[in-house]
Length: 269
Length: 253
Image (cartoon, rainbow over all chains, first blue to last red; front, side, top):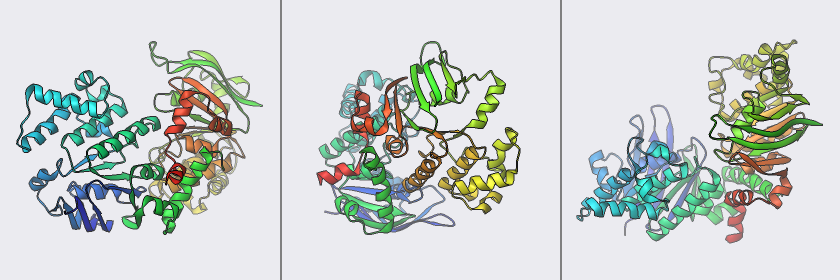
């Protein structure tokens, strides 16, 4: 079976700089991969390039295959067939991912309706409303009937991110890309959202590409990691191996910084 | 000696909702205190009161034994010289059109502090680990971590007794963050430090004492090591349990 996502020699360039430099990775169904990097590492650009969403000034070269179809150089119309079904993304800031003028129930309904129609089992009316509520229950939104009628600004940050996640999984994607999905949230809310993502990925047997600067968070979410620095993958492998025996100096410096805060929390400093 | 005393302070921007509810804590001179809270806890509002940018609805705040009253201009002039602040975002807190020397010397000018400003700026730059030639450059020529060093240099140039920091390392990358924490820790030996943050790991690494705010109230405070080892309040326990850690992964695998 071909991989859900196969990136080979991907480079992303602006007019003056190489932002992602010959990156390769593959993800099969059910696999979880973490992209770790600080600002400017190219981790978010990789997610955008993987879904053909790069800003107009940026150029991708190399190959990105989503469900066996080439993304680099493909027309937007062709990519639309893949987005949602082959891949869906959850972004860092749910407030910018949601339409501020649309009730959240309607925002979830739209991808559900399109996915159902595409699969040849169109949903409408009460069946569609029931499906919206079911998916809101699945992402553990409290009081779904009330929240379906709410606007994004009436919800808390954690609830908004649950709505964004509901929209992503409404398309039943094979691959979920989560780009710093909890960075804008409080740490107690983060723990809840991480538990939710873990359950959804497991229950729906999705692949997960988890992008974050937070090492312990990545370690809790994935089995394999790639450490990116200024667009270059400096190290990759199983989380346990990379974190216990880092081969690259940069990985070592990240780990030692993370361990310092860990140690302080445990009174070992 | 008590430097700051907050005694039964309440505050609300509107009559209906209290942002701070009966908050009390004291800070000794020379201490490093971390004020920890999540969004909506009231930590930023408490900092505004401590800066004299707003007055409590009830309760009192004293600085060095004197009432911190924003309406008392003479007191506030003295106070501003003794208490300076570093903000979260080094990209928005430095004027892009001014040279670094001018940015750092700003408190010296506005507080009309006499002396050799050029030398004082050079000393401040050296205290934060920047080269003297940084003085002639502009903010855009520096990285986020370097900009935060510049903001810290500006805060310490007038020789304050108290340095306040509002999420001062939250916008920084991990490897930069640890270096700025180290810098603040070294400054903490020379002045009192009140560090406001949502990040309990950073507070654990930096502050001797900790105050935990949840929804307008202080739920727990004390010696940082003590609170981390034996958190008493359920919220503190939940907060600590929510922080992802590498060490947990180590024991699992």
